Length: 103
Image 1 (cartoon, rainbow, N blue to C red):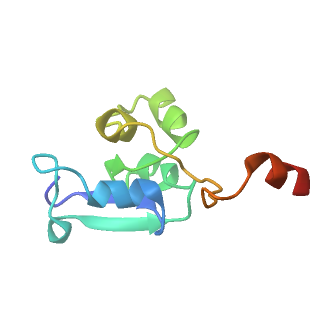
Image 2 (cartoon, helix red, strand yellow):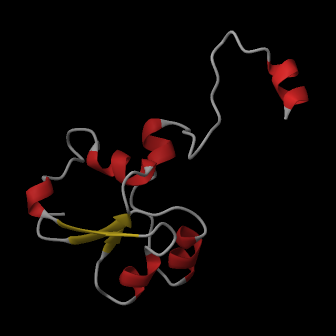
Image 3 (cartoon, helix red, strand yellow):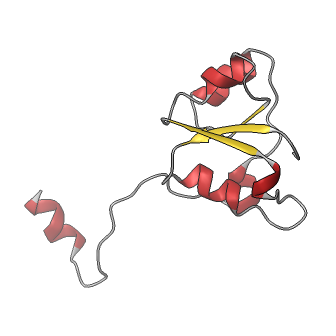
């Protein structure tokens, strides 16, 4: 990916963080690429407009890009396993049934 323009969601976001943490052998050198960070969900715009050849994106943008003939070259869930895009977390001491009743 040397000398490529890559479009991704604005930090902080999981997809861009995982892109920066690709394992050795798939890793890029940050100084070798130009990263364009855009609001989440708008990554397809620069890709379709030809401003980049690579995008790091979520659904439904990914399906839209594939429908336009673009290819998925790396799947983070296949590489890292399933991960949460967002979640609600609590300490183990919180009783889930009691917490649901408070909501």
